[in-house]
Each structure stands twice: as C-alpha cells, then as structure tokens.
Length: 167
Image 1 (cartoon, rainbow, N blue to C red):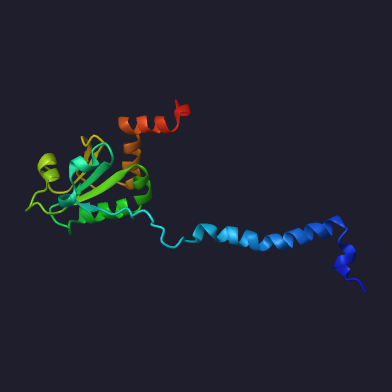
Image 2: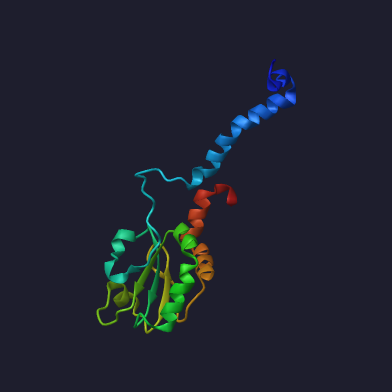
C-alpha cells in the first residue's frame, strides 16, 4: 500500500509544505549566524577612556577626535557625572572617531594639561586637527557632544566624502 505522502506528492501545496520542512533548519541557523563567533577572530577593542599620560598627540593627529575630561580629583562629582553621561554614548562617540582622554592628576601635569590649562573640572572637545573647539566648565550630555562634533568643519567634510549625494 503506497504511503499517503507518495499519493499526494503531485499536489502543489504538498510539494510546497515538503520544501518548507527542509528549509526550517537552514532558517534557524541563518537566524543564529549574527550571534556566532568565529574561533580566533579578533573583535575590535572596546571604547574605553585613556589616561592623558599615555596619549601622544602625534599618534592621533588627523586620525582621532579627542574629547578630554579634566578634573583635580577622580572623586570630583562633576567628573563622575561626566563619565556617566559619556558612557551612555560610547557607540556614537566611537562611530565619530573619538578618543576619550581623562586627566585627574594636576600634581603631575600631562602635555595636554599644560597645553589646555584647565582650572578644576573642564570638558574640552577638539577636532581632528587637535585644536580646541568647545570648552565646558560643567558636565555635558553625550548626545550634545555628538551633535557638536557633527557640526565641526572636518566632520562635515568627512560626511560629504562618505555620502556625496548629500550635498
């Protein structure tokens, strides 16, 4: 006695159902692909603040856009608040080639502290040419920093290079 599936193979909806049954494992594996890690593949480093003593301006000139947070003490409430606000926008800042630099030790001044001469807490946003564009004496929201970076001349030129139709 022939099987029921063998009798119904000629019907179009049965062929379609059989195709869908074979396709399910493929769809399941395809859905999991973004979460899979390839063994030995290196992921880009996380966006983390870098102490000012470790930064050499010449290494990042025209490559990265510095956002520098100065404070006289790492326990300064404004410094703590600023770092909290910035941590919410790490992805946006990384997309704009930002390097986040912190300096909380006025006793041993870094080259950036000597160049910019902050008094107490200070937030300095610079362009890729490492010239100060914005100085703030109080903490600033991450989205406001991102918006101000997007208005800088070098950032606008980069955006036009990436999308020439946006003129």
